[in-house]
Length: 376
Ligand SMILES: CC(=O)SCCNC(=O)CCNC(=O)[C@H](O)C(C)(C)COP(=O)(O)OP(=O)(O)OC[C@H]1O[C@@H](n2cnc3c(N)ncnc32)[C@H](O)[C@@H]1OP(=O)(O)O
Ligand SMILES: O=C([O-])CC(=O)C(=O)O
Image (cartoon, rainbow, N blue to C red):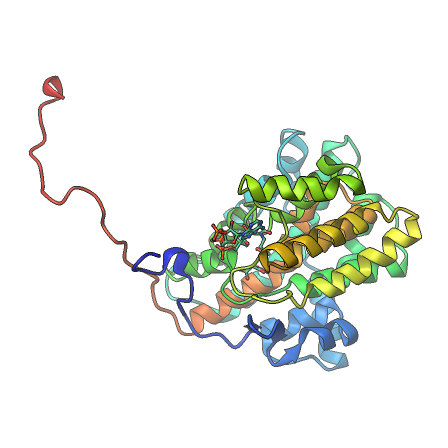
């Protein structure tokens, strides 16, 4: 036990009205609306509006918001050229990180220094609209496929699936992804959101903040865990090998991806939604192996360690069953979380203060003379 909050556990770093994560109760709400009700009654666009404007839109507000988002999809030519010429084996998360950073090169609205809140709101919308196109265009370009022009007649989830697959998705598929987007949109002071806030709190610009966040989301202890889950399931291979695999991990203190959470001490309230969708999709595919293996892993970890599935655990099987390549799982998380990152950046700038915690110094106590290089 250390005498400081290692990993900032339990430390409250700021105030936010956006999402409420109740770790002991296993509850999540955005702006006072329970995640279950948002999943049942809203689209991702409504939730993005809620996060960025503080209230749910009425129909005309939603229509104007969707039109505005859809009108911002087209990427600058420089970014398109980059996506076409980038290495075909790059990590899509690295592509988005660089792509968002490139968007910031040419967007004159993004400024450092005293915040221009109106300009920042515009930039926030552009980032939400353009990240999915960066992901999809790179995915097509790396396969040597054409880059179809963006469309303005499809919602966010349907448009992304249209771009990666080259054909319009069924309503059911689009809604499945839409629900996944809602579930991933915001989550308190998670590591990537914290990164975004730390960056913008220096009065840097929104693109820099989102670039920091993307780099942070990528790691397997955070958003990258959803890709780790499928890699783990593929490594295990068969249902009857699950118990031995988990036992081996526990013995060797190897982490099981998609399990455990810093804040939730009970089941992550987002997991049941994803589990339900994973069951439905795998049943339709006639391939229940992945969900059966996942359920067994979750059961063992609950019984043996008191640890539960987090949001990354079942999302992996959902995306896998939708035919989405594994290395696009974390990018999909980024597409959805862009709504939260940008809303959190806007909120940070409304009442800003630089983040600057302390470190407990554990180096030499006495200062030493610097010896000449010939004597070291
Ligand atoms: C969207 C998201 O970011 S959700 C999280 C996604 N990340 C993952 O799924 C990766 C796997 N999970 C983990 O690594 C962790 O549970 C974290 C990083 C999410 C949170 O962990 P922390 O609060 O930092 O807990 P920490 O890593 O210190 O673990 C505490 C104890 O639980 C164990 N533990 C935690 N998660 C796991 C796991 N997934 N598998 C096995 N053991 C685990 C640790 O080994 C440790 O055990 P010990 O006390 O016997 O040494
Ligand atoms: O809150 C966290 O630490 C991680 C998480 O679940 C998320 O970002 O969705």
